Length: 267
Image (cartoon, rainbow, N blue to C red; front, side, top):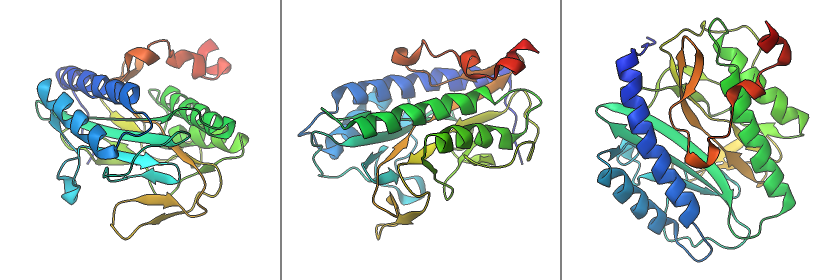
């Protein structure tokens, strides 16, 4: 069942989203070569709790940490342990907060120190895929239109779109209906209506879209060992269009409207 959210619920999620966004911003600024992923996880948990939230990921289906920290070929669900970041790494951080009973979920990828132009390009295009997906979250569109927007942009740059993992509804639970694939056929799935809250999260790889899960049961890596990037926002659909609930200060310039097709804006 798809649970549409009231304006009151969306406001609670917005407040929780500010916590999630602020902690992610801090982690992105703090991460550097020589730092362990475990250190980042500890900072995340403390930052969430100090602002009145609870780390959603910790204990979720047995996950042992407050963030997912995924490096280079790790697509998602990397367990933050003693691994030290090094210059040139591509780091993706996924983080969630539960605040007053509602979840917000967001992710971003950054380069550690000096990264290759290829890694920079992959991160830029993946972030663009996210914004294009959000721009397609319009009243009357179908859920597949989000994935179509993501896939077209990624494929146009020669990248693979991970198919084994998807975005999702979010609210009282971290994973609610509907599923939001990052690929598909236009005009399929549920009609998007005000009150719908989604975690839209393109996971884009340099090479194949195929992935493998490691023996720990969590860590998902690209099958060909090539780089992957991951960006995510929690987004509420309102009468006025999509509203990003986890927007970070550094991204406040991102105007969803500029990613919408010109013919749609003109209409």
